[in-house]
Length: 138
Image 1 (cartoon, one colour):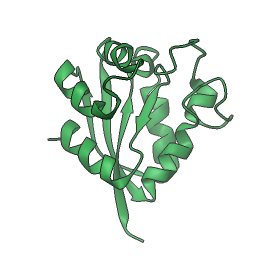
Image 2 (cartoon, rainbow, N blue to C red):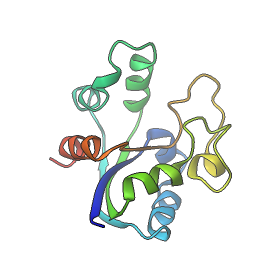
Image 3 (cartoon, one colour):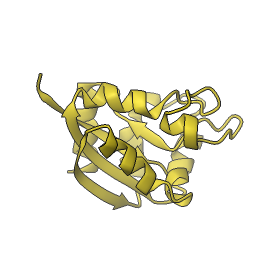
């Protein structure tokens, strides 16, 4: 197997709640390498490019507004099957139904319809990871 790279974002809710260290600890405990980390105040242009596939969907504007609401920690993580592994570690996008032991299951809060406030983002494929890493670590 070859080493993969993926983008992980600690979203504004995770940063505001002081969970960045715990999230980084879990990534490292899983055996992944933190290849690069940046503290970012993302602008609308970057977020629009990142979430381009969702443009026009009802949750698009609320998602951009949420992601603009505070700093984000962008992480380039590397490891065997890191894309699949981190998504499993993150848990289901809805923190209420995310399994115990996952980041969202253990640390997430139920924000009602605000499912985008779910602490982390992880690339969903090698193509997405390449595109997203190019945006956040250009």
